[in-house]
Image 1 (cartoon, rainbow, N blue to C red):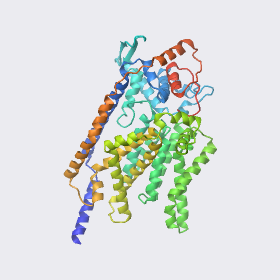
Image 2: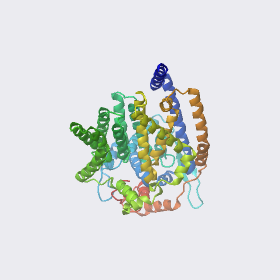
Image 3: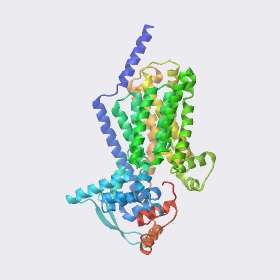
Image 4: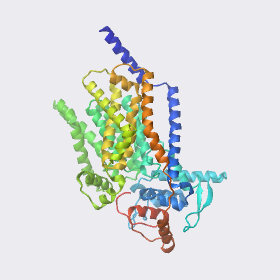
Length: 548
């Protein structure tokens, strides 16, 4: 018995040592390596974009045509702010925009998530002022010969070019975002890094309860996320739902959940006012989930007072889900907002097959289709999917041990963080399964889960005894070697994608519009073409009411 006690004490001591983390010196080294890796990934992304489009040798109007659909739509606001007589005049004009939805004046800053374009355009104006004052040369231009039927064009490259400046700012975040190598101006290029910060900070708080500054950072990251991407409310709703699940499982207390609630509620209020009182935030799933948490805790309190202790915890997830539906319907009815209706129309079409004209337009695009079988083949070849599955099974096993009281107390804080990320993975898997575009959440989350393979404390919790570092290190190196076989092949395939953008038909169309129509002529056309038309010709367009 004495030997068992000593062994248990030694194991707990080892867990405590691991939970204390590395020294500040080692952490600083880790931050340096992470920063260097991020810059390397950004360079890799930029190289793939250049190889696939020959971007550096395109004229500015060709680059604008390259930004199709919503990319061109959002970039057009950046172009307007950069070319306006003054930044203030440009901002005022966007609050009275009558070109985007011709026939009615809208506040584009409220209607769309344009904070990335506002910030980057302000930075560009400051950059140009400084370089002009110091007479610094910031771009190189040359003549580029094209097809025999097309005239030569002038192509400029460098930070002084407004399009290159925009692209460079995007690639500063490239080490944290996905798909940025093909579609830089999309909202997820700016929004997903903010969501990663939220996931990191929440995980840190679950593992080791932090002080006030951590909640402030979570709130600021959430505000940033909501300001740059309309889809943020759904992603944040999954975070709230995951925390409710942890509370139901008994991994976090009601007090801890309330602290998260205050943090997120403050963030949505700040975002609401910064988006000019955008009613869509108050009718979003995120707001509905926050109100539902309060309802859930109130119902639990009533059941506990009535001595229904077992029923109180069992009813939590059902109360939460029912509350979301009721609050969402109620706020939508009161505020009469339908700006996010197309999102739920797509989900309804995917699940029940109930299509509208708009959903047919969306679902005919490949990115809104179901997740293809090819995705599972590729992630299995790199061992990402199998390893994520193994880690999830291990996490469920640890949770079962914890519920059966067969393990010791130090595991609690760690398992909350692990289960939180696993629930997030389940949410993203469901979302990506219905809409392929949302795999941008799924793949990085699987990478986060697989990173637990390198966590000594995680393995210590599973096997119940101390693992020598050299054996764990050797096993991880062997696994990475196996994963790199398919991984290196995928990288080579991506680097072999070499092309050059050219669209003579669209160029001729826009030339005709610029030379043969009045500057105030209004055009109605398909959604992909209308965005390019607005960007390149600066003509008013007639669009539907749904957000781009």
